[in-house]
Length: 402
Image 1 (cartoon, rainbow, N blue to C red):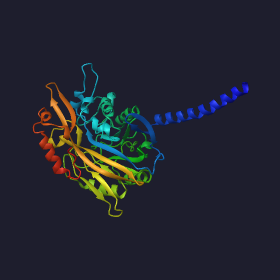
Image 2 (image 1 turned 180 degrees about the vertical axis):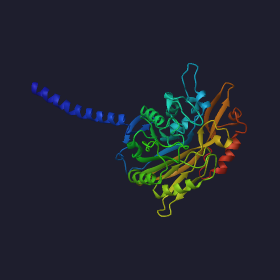
Image 3 (image 1 turned 45 degrees about the vertical axis):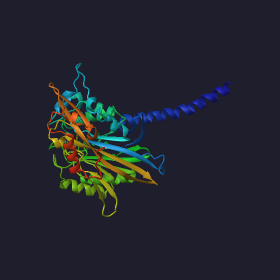
Image 4 (image 1 turned 30 degrees about the horizontal axis):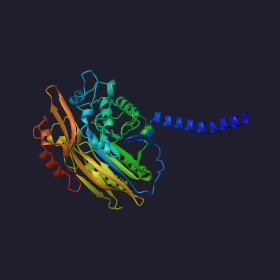
């Protein structure tokens, strides 16, 4: 009997010890920030690391991923004030409540976090040096966003690296989502972020053209991912070798212009030569062209959204109030992964003067009505205006008005 009991205990230990080791390793990865979360929107799970891509469970199985991406989450003072509650708390869920259904229905949803999530350690402020409450980030996470791109011209607004540290701290508290573009360590700067969904591995790259003249700290040149040609080429080479689909999120272009500038043209060629599949641009605050770009040497096609404009802001030019939601389908068919559908659904930034501040929200243009438009604080923000504008800029092949 004693011998049988001893044998039973040994068997139990043989099971428990490996489990404990595995749990300890996973906890260590989460604490170090090296885990990239892949969120099943009903059952969050960790499936990949930033340091290395995991082996796909079904490399040969036909599968698909739907992805959406929206533009600038640009939080001015009036938006900060709009979230203040009677009890002194902050709640920004209303910003996204009218569009969150589209966000949550996608397999992967991306948002450009234009302004720094520096949080309450610093004074909240809007233009020109933005510091955004963490509660805005909480609302965006709850709305269904999985990926936050943070390399923007405002990345150093909050006391340079001090703000980046706090932004990274916010995302450490939300391992169910991924943030790219700002870095707490040099190791993060030198690491590609991979995101796996439905057996397809995505590499996610994010760069900004600059930081509004604020110099990057000399002792921390790695804290923001800049559009540096050598780095971009190196990252693309690594990403292409390890991922099924490479997505680049450049912060570039000329503000308030629908035209493509020379920097954008230069880097489109670099992205194409490096084997990127998808390019989704931000910064101009207005919509720009969507097009397929075919590499002359390889024949590989790459879809480019030069600018998807603003998502939510208090920029009051009518053209700044009409952004876009990139809608993509990426499929593996007969072992080959490719973009099989690329659309853009216009979105409208809504703001209403309550007489005691403003109320903000975002609508997909297909849900935006003349009755809603009649409550806009801005004259002329009609369904027709935004429809005509979208048709003027976005080709019929890509425009989704339904």
